[in-house]
Amino acid sequence: MKTTKLIGALLFLAGIIAFLGIITAEAFYPIEYTTFKNEISDLGATRPPNSLIFQPSATLFNTSMLMAGVFVLISTFLQNMFFKKLLFTIPFGLFGLGLVGVGIFPGNIDPYHGLSSMLVFLSGGVAAITAFKIVSIPFKYFGIALGSIALTAWFLAMFFPSILFSSIGMGGTERWVAYPILLWLTGLGAYLMNESNTQSSTINRV
Image 1: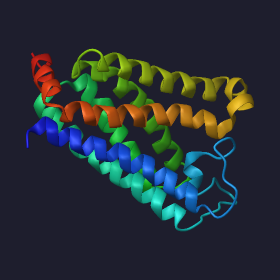
Image 2: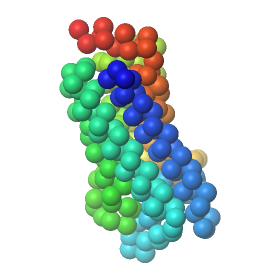
Image 3: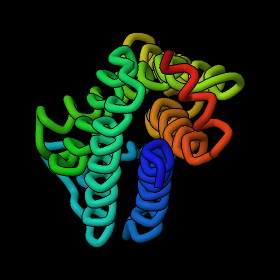
């Protein structure tokens, strides 16, 4: 298997595992859980001081994030050997590290969970944008758009929360940050598994 195909397979799996982990954990959540009021990380544990942890949702969510993060970290190492584009490698590696942190430190563990989530959101958005260094048109434009959406939603949530919270809630706002990144991640995996795209990416290395 070519290096780029292996990278693509790992990233595609990371995206699928993250999405299905979230969906399955939501399905097993024993009390009312809505995408309007609940943060994604509530699936692992709600915020302190009165944290709630429900099984098997917590194990499903935490394991999915950890696995996705490990796959991203392995892919970061491999793609850096192939593409040698630090502008992309650094935020992408931080994104993988953040996912691992989310899996290891559930929502009831402060401040590590919050820091890990912040790392996922910021570095993931930046990585989606800087991936233009290793992909070609039109996918590079999708990456820039999805990364920009994620970062814009994060900025609004942090500094002007009422703009989005009143219409789509805290949970919906967080998903507008996280899901564009996960969609891009899955798309990047599919892109790199494609033979013709692999050839174009090789040209971009020069």
